[in-house]
Image (tube, rainbow, N blue to C red; front, top):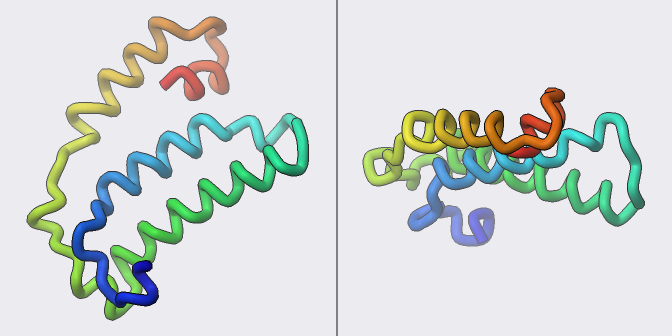
Length: 104
């Protein structure tokens, strides 16, 4: 839709960044475990699509010229990442890096 309309009006880059963070933390197991081809492909597509959307909104002209940064100002670093990291550490089953990241 962004490529066809050449506009990102109504799409939140901050939300896409949050999706990318969640997908990267949750799908970290791609680096050491293989479940199935479908599972691996689905995870790679989700991560790639989120990162590509962020790239288009921030850097690809003419789409980036329609991005309204002043309207997309939710501070997820302050309000969400800290509390989610704390809750992830409290409620994780095992205190290993992959389990803590998955819990966040």
